[in-house]
Image 1 (tube, helix red, strand yellow):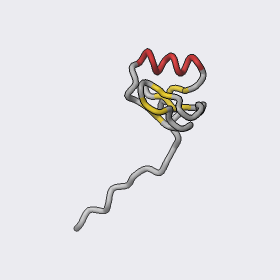
Image 2 (image 1 turned 120 degrees about the horizontal axis):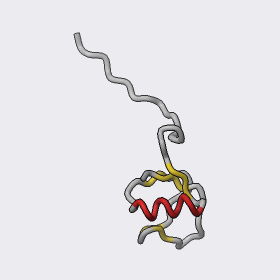
Image 3 (image 1 turned 180 degrees about the vertical axis):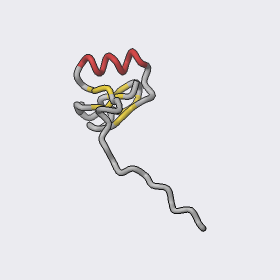
Length: 65
């Protein structure tokens, strides 16, 4: 489950043995139960295609002719 942190924590807070990530950070390497708990607690949101910010799409370089 990919999540985005939407609430900051005080300095020194940890998340799964790592420093608490900054707001807006996307994480996809947490166990599903931990990620689901963070979403249910309101400190994170699940990232889906609908919630993923739209950035610039990469373009392929023109082929040499």
